[in-house]
Image 1 (cartoon, one colour):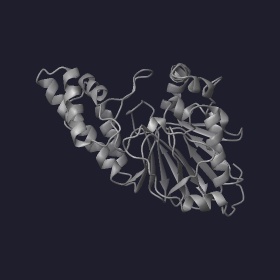
Image 2 (cartoon, rainbow, N blue to C red):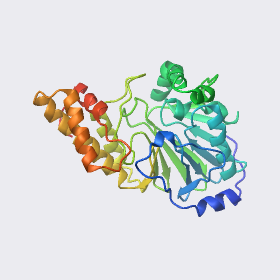
Image 3 (tube, one colour):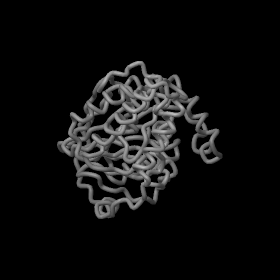
Image 4 (tube, rainbow, N blue to C red):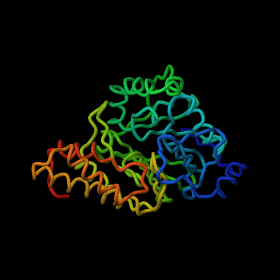
Amino acid sequence: MMKLLASLVASALMAAAASAPAFSQTASTDPHQWKMTAADTPVRISEHVWMIKGNPNIAVVVGDRSVLVVDTGLGPKMGAIAAGFAAKLAPGKRIFLTTTHFHPEHAAGDQGFPAGTTLIRNDVQQAEVEQYGLPMVKSFADRSEENRELLKDVAFRTPDVTFHDEVKVDLGGGVTVRLLWFGEAHTQGDELTFVEPDATLVSGDVVQNATIPTIYTGYGKGGTPTTWLKVVDKIAELHAKHVVPDHSLPGNDSLVPEERRLIAEIRTSAIAMKAQGVSAEQAGAEISARLKQEHPDWHSTDASAFVKSVYLDPDTSAL
């Protein structure tokens, strides 16, 4: 692997991003309606990590030799915009790309990246891409004319590198990225990105901010509430200082324990209601109503789908 010469990154884009204000987006707005454009200004999350707000948020990790982009956006056009941010933040540097999971807004834009981009993905997620990627793309394309145009002629690239539990990517200058698969949660192949020495976690859909967890089973099997909790427990051991979620605002180290608390509370309540003979539908309605009272500013507090996942989960042991 050839090493590119280290260069100072002093572009006007980086200077503007370094002084950019915190996001003003309110918690009640739908993050799936956030749009990324080429005119956006990246916000600096930590010393080596930048984020562009969109659906999903795109993370860019900059080292002395190389740059890593996490997620692609919905289709090749969005992928090209994400690649453009990497080129501006790290001009002339080798580009690595990884994806948090196989859903189209996260992975179906890889064609928009330059031909020399090195694509890395865990093998569980790659199996989901191969089996469910294109059917999922069609499902998204059928939702709107805009989606249909963005996802036109999508064909997923074959990864250059696959791994199972973990692979480390050295970006140069002491910046190392750990790509991790801790188990099943939102999907079977959820991938986590941990940046050292920043202690910044790009959490995909596994750790969110003011957001109800969702186990997606329309295409693919997904995890269970129990396996999701186990994944979050492993994440806690990383001691992240900064968290960049896919579909909500970035936050600090409090987001990981808050995610665990939310999942555990929904799971515990649902298990108890199931034991009392309460239907999944009624339990979902009651738990959602309680969450609405507790979090009136959240975009959505509808936990009915997650409650159904608890009812279907064979593991009801205390965690």
